Length: 85
Image (cartoon, rainbow, N blue to C red):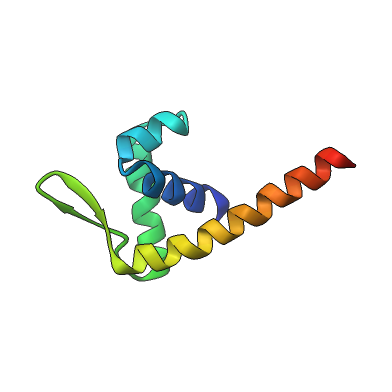
């Protein structure tokens, strides 16, 4: 798993939308969809279902998101450390 895929996944989870995530990450919606598909293939499970035009995270996505958030807390701590040095 690379950072770009994890960042896209996190942004989709937080925004609830691939279009909004694309805007926030300064890319296109098709690119975000492609990156999420790559992450799904890499992980071996579906991350989202689309029901009536709405994007819904799967149980697996929710579990992965908890770990992703812990990792981003660690990154925030590293940034704070770098600033204080």
